Structure formats: structure tokens, C-alpha cells
Length: 85
Image (cartoon, rainbow, N blue to C red):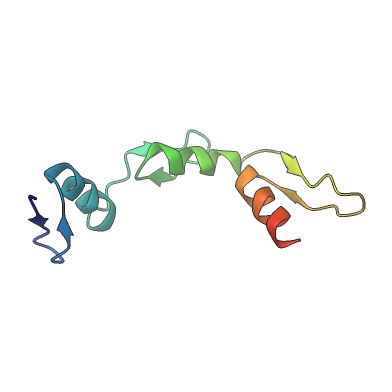
């Protein structure tokens, strides 16, 4: 098995590609994915997508339990709400 060690923090990765990903997310401040609504930058497309959901004028997701009234901009938060309540 090939192991590659990060020179910046001694983390051991199993491949060069995973080392590159590690360096990009842990040691690099570059944020090439920009929000077209507010110009905030993100390290990956997924984080940008989740951020763009917060620009909705109204809450996109709401609890369907009668009398609850919980609303959220993201489906993930609604699912967490269902687990908690």
C-alpha cells in the first residue's frame, strides 16, 4: 500500500489525489466557486450550492406536522428537525 504524507501537517493519505484534496481543503485559502448573488467564495461546488439556498426569499422547506411551524432554507435542516422532534 502506498502512503503519501502531507508536508504541512504530517497527515498520511492513501494516494496522491487524496493528498491534493486534503491540501486544497485544509491548507489552501483559495475559494474558486463564487456566489452570483453576493460574491462569497467557496472551496467546492457543493458548499456553494448549499449557500445559494440561503438566498431564497421564503423558506423552501416546512414541517408538515400540524401546529409545528418549523421552516428551513435547506432540506438537510428539515431532516435534522424531524429527527430531533
